[in-house]
Length: 174
Image (cartoon, rainbow, N blue to C red):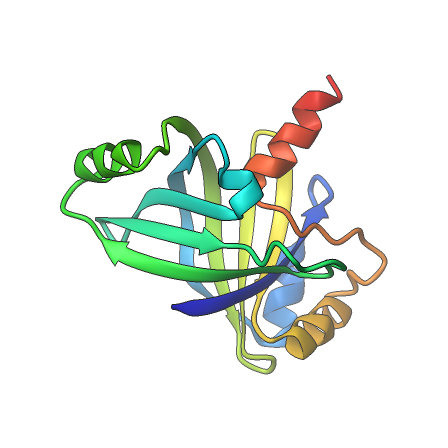
């Protein structure tokens, strides 16, 4: 189990965030690639704060279960406990989760580019989805804050939701 701490910030169209990252000494870990995620939900998964997902990582299917602290009040960060398990196949993972009551499946795809910023020891992803471009900064809270300042993004709205929740917010306004 690891503790995931991150913040997302929506980027403007055409914003050259990669140029800023390079100037700061960050380097690309993984070039742009397509990532498809299958999110699983049960009747009470949102109330419980348990969110399983399956996706391909390094050409192998992986089950990740994210657990939210549902007692947390003020949210400045997306914080979850994260458990990861390799799977034999996506099909076997889907069947297993359905047996456990996770019968609602939502699929989404994004273009992702991965970076590492050694000065702050943070992982950074640039994600493009059909509803926008985002930067995701993951690391320790203090280093996330310094990275946001380094990138001149401190005046931007913080997003502390998963992409599916962001999509739900957008669709509810249509």
